Image (cartoon, rainbow, N blue to C red; front, side):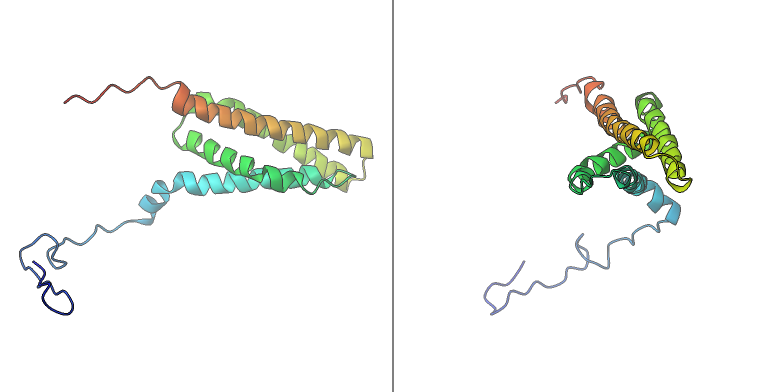
Length: 165
């Protein structure tokens, strides 16, 4: 017990007590594989979120009228969709993630064709159409991913039973 009569409280070290630092076991050694597995959703979600933001900047880059506020304003939705897609992938919820992954594949294909059209000197009408299609696909991808995550995590799960006492 602490001695409160002293100018500064002093508590002697108890040798057999649980809070004795020397009595505590050392923490287990963690391998890098375990650390990566524990943080897989965070790492993959960050990569996917940054990828969606890069796709949004690429779609915006081909617009003749600059809308510089669009990508920064919608970036939180891209980040949330990246985290949601990573959670679905890591948890192997393929049925829920399938529409998002198909839309993402279409988005990557349209963006690739848009970049090809930019570097090969194709008409501006084609690039505008591809940029609009990429923007629409990006919006649908984000909406489908967030809806799939909500469905897989909250809407599909039955109510948990009340704890028994």
